[in-house]
Image (cartoon, rainbow, N blue to C red):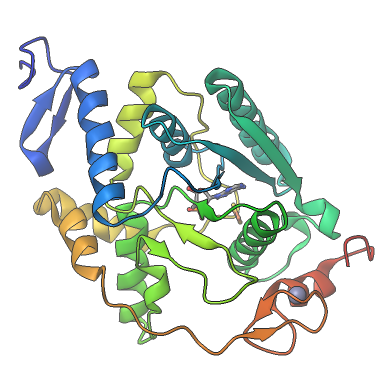
Length: 289
Ligand code: AMP
Ligand code: FES
Ligand code: ZN
């Protein structure tokens, strides 16, 4: 098969766009997709102080590289969750990426807050999500960043939505929009520049560009059943995931009333924030309180 743009041998075939491309033309195509989305939904501004949250996986690694290609200025943040070899390897990948692309890397160790993920019992993934969101927001605010961007993909948004709706839960619109403005002085804006890009598109870009990234799931990750459902639909109806998340955008609702945690002072939905509850339960020392 030949590349639709230049006629060279195609290495990538995208069913959702009904197009085959060579490596160079794919990189170009991907960059334009991300650029269009950032402009259309005003996800990031060139005059903002941007912090990119980078896990060492393909999605956030692709985000770092493409935003650099698009001329954005930013620093990156990696949170070391203390999950043995998994975290060590993820951290190494982020260090290699930051060297390769010459970007400033910040590392925060969860252990500095008194615990690591393997010490958490019960709903590990949900505690981990709470910890990551907390640290991203606090680090960004304390260092004067305007916005934190994550590598959430179209599959992340679509599966989150389906899972919650199917479970009869209210889905807060803040989870579904490409940019959330701060509703309080303690909150930094959140951006998802890859919200309409698929995991496969990120993977192809990362492979073609030779970016360092870690494959393999976190040892605590449950089976991603809702994502598998999204993959299945996409297989039968190419383009479904992207169209679905585009449809979700704009279903915004007002955030809840803001309160502050009585222990750490960060925003909270109750007397004590969820991060401090986890910390009090699992921490061995009072370091970081
Ligand atoms: P996940 O929750 O693992 O699906 O990751 C979603 C996004 O959160 C990633 O694309 C990253 O932007 C960010 N992220 C996840 N883990 C970390 C980490 N350990 N350090 C910094 N950012 C992370
Ligand atoms: Fe958080 Fe696996 S990365 S529990
Ligand atoms: Zn707190």
